[in-house]
Image (cartoon, rainbow, N blue to C red; front, side):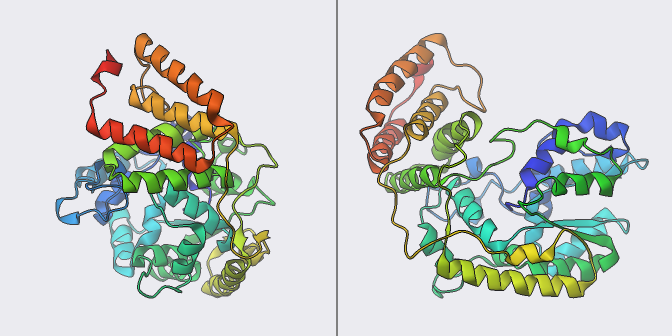
Length: 402
């Protein structure tokens, strides 16, 4: 995760017809193959179908978020009916595979399987990954979460699937041992060469130069990382949602698809807006990991596109423990509030247009909030959203829909 996968998948899914014309099948009709791969791995992937409340571990005995096996069978049926084209299958959940699961994938896909692994400097991945976890309800502070990542809290270890996916050296060696190093390509994502990722896929797949990079993306389809202010506001919202025992279904609709969806779709952060930075202690540990990963990958014999030294390049850091922000930019507050309201009345990034009356009521309420937004802190705003979330749980929104 957080190595350019979503922007790559977005390009591929938006260009399915052109890919077919150039000898490549990107099966299915959705952004990526998350459901099919989740079904194959028996992995819970659908947040809106998780049971329980925000902050609770889902009860897997009644978990309906594991996609049915038909998802994988449907994907394979499409691949097997087209022997004249390369098939391109993509989702980062596969990086969590154990040795046995990786072997199972290769056995299912066939001996012509080629594995492509996109990697990035761990010190750049971790801030992005923490903000990604915020989008799924996490309420740990960045520093507390980093302490778990670096095994400093033995009583709260990270999931073994997470550790497998983040150990880049072992990840590459695992797949190379199963398909052979000649059938593995590592692409090192490097902010100094942003064009390298899509160019590499074009060359691997025999596509015309520039085809993938011409695809149009936005903050949602590229899954951009949150800025520091956006992340702080969402952290406070998540804590409020947990205190209010908000269900995953309501959180997904109002916050994930509403507040966050609108932030990503409608807001373009200024170039100088502060980003989340690693504490110095964590950056040094990440850099040490990056050096070790690079050495192991170099020894593995796989094809490497890019510079392995980028995995341990220095990054900007924060000094000491970074305190939470006391306020957020007005447009961050405005867009998140409007996104929540849009979702509540059935309109938003992922929803159809709302009835005109409901739209006008929502806009009137939003205008009232906007006028006061510059005098409220991030915690004030999260408290206001907490009240709205509680109201959503206790009352019907049928009146809004009318």
